[in-house]
Length: 99
Image (cartoon, rainbow, N blue to C red; front, top):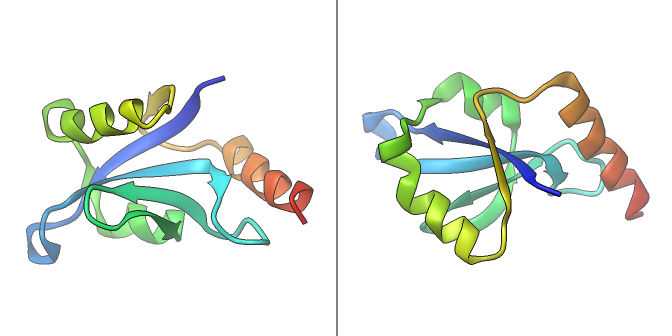
């Protein structure tokens, strides 16, 4: 099964880093935060809506190196522009199942 991923880019004032959001993978017990990944720092928790608000979509040429890194770590990626309501529900459900 592929992992839904949304690639985003921080504004230049915040470093212009490209990062990945995994809206279906929880990063906390309650599923409020999704998992994110960045070259520096690697996995962490992220507020999906906050990240979407402060960043812009990354172009394929901007996220290609990060995509390759994630695939090298074993991820099968389903690249999307936005997460659906169902993706967020799946994250909360997954968090609940791991309690």
